Length: 95
Image (cartoon, rainbow, N blue to C red):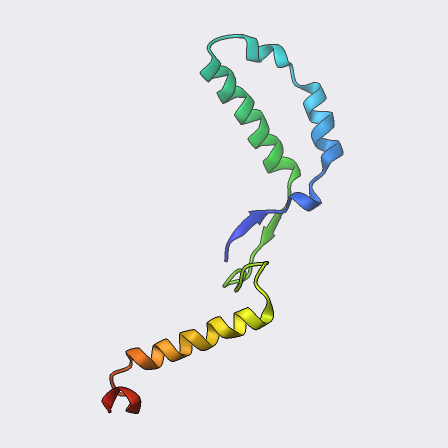
């Protein structure tokens, strides 16, 4: 099973408090790449500490959010028909 960050349940107040404590002058030292690396490390650390992980199901989402039930049924039917078409032992294939 896969894990994913659940940003809807993150502790925004905790992140704000921790960001207020950061000495941002550290970013002015060194090159742009070094500053980006420091900034990214700060953000990843805050994410790991204040954003909860959510366990996804074994199969995840079965269909896209935008797909209606009727469209999903049509896709399943198409898959079944194609599986029969590929099966060399199916009576329709043998004929």
